[in-house]
Length: 427
Image (cartoon, rainbow, N blue to C red; front, side, top):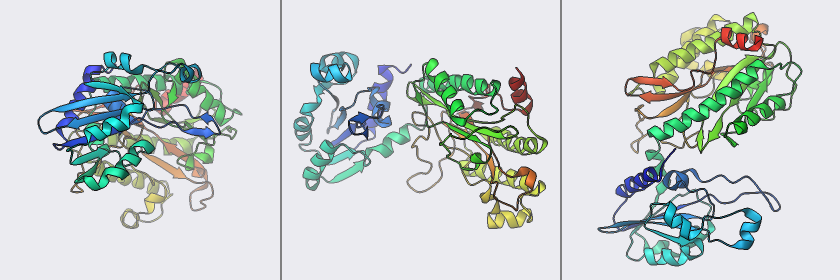
């Protein structure tokens, strides 16, 4: 659990990075309309949540950096009986003052008036350039000519989010533990002649049953050739005996994500050809994970993964040129088109920087959490591929914490060897 003390420390750390005589505004997420007057389930803006832990919409966090002193102010939706009748209880100003370690709390209808006061003698305004908050955008358009500088606060916050605290890591671990239950259940149950959406429903049920009320992303259940569409989310086809299923599914527990992929046989047993491909990907994933440590660059992991996968694809007759020619012409990209992994945390794809302002790659540091996810994708319609391998897509993905001693595979308890997957299917 992340305490209010930790949120306050984050705000203090952020204030120390800001220019003197500056004002920072971070907005809550806006309510999104699904159709007519029906809304999507509300999910808080990640940067706003990272700094406040506050889950309500129509809220603003303002950081005031004066010449000598700093101040934090929170604006919240005021309590209104009619609105609460339809949309639920609000914390309100009084309870917010008791709950959050900020200097001042006001109702959101006072935001514009107070902002005009705060902007006096301020030279720099920080805000998220991706915000869609019309109130803030209108205010900025009216005062922009009076400012020396307007800067994107999101970049600074996302840099802070690169290194996870102990409490953040514990939440990620809990999210992974829930995902483990769902993936193992999917391995155990009979799947032949079921539909992809039935497995998707199983994952959503297990997630919610264990306190993860949201998916971290739309679950991918890709049977057979569907696995060769990287972001396949239709999930509407029947699962066929003899094919593999690529399942990319993670949940969000108290705003922290898991991101796990396993590829399993529909009937519980890998064919000889499927096993050959699967063990190639597993070998590559195991090797790349073992390379994770402080100072290593993601580009090095990417190069090694491409090298190992390419050698395997040549050995299986899928790539028919020499290793040197394949790498020079990047022919392997046809079958491994994506990156080896990404940062994760509050967002499943955390918007953390991968490079410095000088365009230099940021090496891995203790406290970073990233995915390692090699894969091979062999479309059914590609007649250059030996027939026994066509229509197979395999990805294996784990969540890795960089430590002072090297790494910790946070998802290592989710089975992935051929032997263990087949044993769960039998159970």
